Amino acid sequence: MVAEKMTFVAPPDGSVAHGTFVVELTHFSGPLDLLLSLIRDEQIDIRDIPIARIAEQFLARISTLELDEAAEYLEMAARLLRIKAQMLLPRNENDEAWEDPRAELVRRLLEYQQMREIVDVLDIRAEARRNRFARAFLPEQPAPPAAPLALSLGELLNAVDRIIRAVRTPSMHDVIPRALDVDGAMNTVRGMMAAHANARWTDLLAPSSEPWEVLSLLLALLELARRGEIRLAQPRPFANVEIARDVAASEAA
Amino acid sequence: MTSPLAKLLEAALFASARPVTADELTALDDSATSDEVAAAITELREHYDGDGHGVELLEVAGGWQILTRPEYTEAIERAQLAARPHRLSAAALETLAIIAYRQPLGRAEIEEIRGVAVGGVLKSLHDRGLIEVTGRAEGLGRPLLYGTTALFLEQFALRHLEELPRADELAIALRTVAPAGSVT
Image (cartoon, rainbow over all chains, first blue to last red):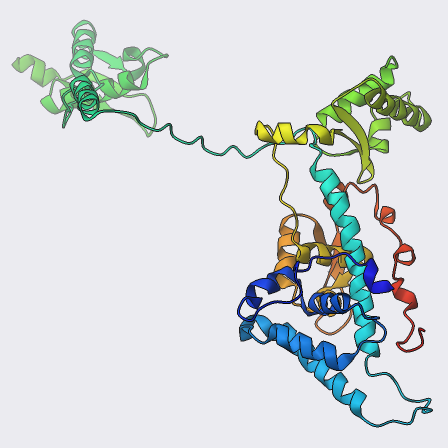
């Protein structure tokens, strides 16, 4: 008989007390699964289902379900009851046109049962593959659990003390000296001006000057010009800056 | 194992994280013919099987892959060097079985066979890379059609889909279902 060849997940015991069934249902992957389980437990031919008995059992099984999770089971229950009603209708035994109202259900059950067979095949194969590791497997490294602490309060306080001693006095504010040397650059310009009446920006600056040297020179020139020691001129934008001794100022000095 | 080609294949198979197809193996050596590669694969497989090795060479997902032998799985897992993937739920396996046989097909057809909603299961199978969207059906709403992936073949140690038992080899042959009542 077909039903006996089936292997699928089913509760170990078919008779289930009321109230525990919601948990039991997790053993079934759907109403067809439950139906097949009933058919197997009853050892009946899937093609000749005593629909009244099976419908009754099916209803008993799902009677305690929450409505939300039972929609699919309820739909099947309704289907079973409809088939049951159709079976009760009187008919002529010799009626050629009569179609067994169970036909569609049987077709679906067989289809489902066949699929369960494939599931068994897949399950065996997946298990075989699960037991073999491929190269290049990268395991997810779980964080190692922290070692349990075995400390007395004294040891803990000592450790805290050691750490506090090691910490430097916190500094709230550090004054960072300016990285520019404006005074030095001013001396350089004054030296140049003492020797020559005129000079140019490029005379004062080596080609490989650092940015801080350029900035220092610029500030020094502006400062000296402000003090009136030199005059600055630039004939056009981006041209070389021309530096000249301020004659009036040097005469006054 | 003395053949240089077999050694080359072994190195390539060792380096790859995925099964390596015969074509890819043939491309490793310009002068090697596909027959020579096939012979070298056999040589390598027999070497692993015959000379006592902890690994074996298996044909999966249209290619070849070096895998550890099952008898060492437990020790390897206990030492946390590798972990087996989680088993698929019954619902996931059922859905996968239907897709494997009927692909490409849409969600409604799967639900028709299983008798339950499969939206969540489809998503988790898709997330695990076992199924993919292969297109859209012509019908109302142009539903998505699903099919299995190469990873499905790999995780089920299948060379190709045809390796699954044919429908008429199963105890119940679906396509020849007789109407109820005609069976005595």
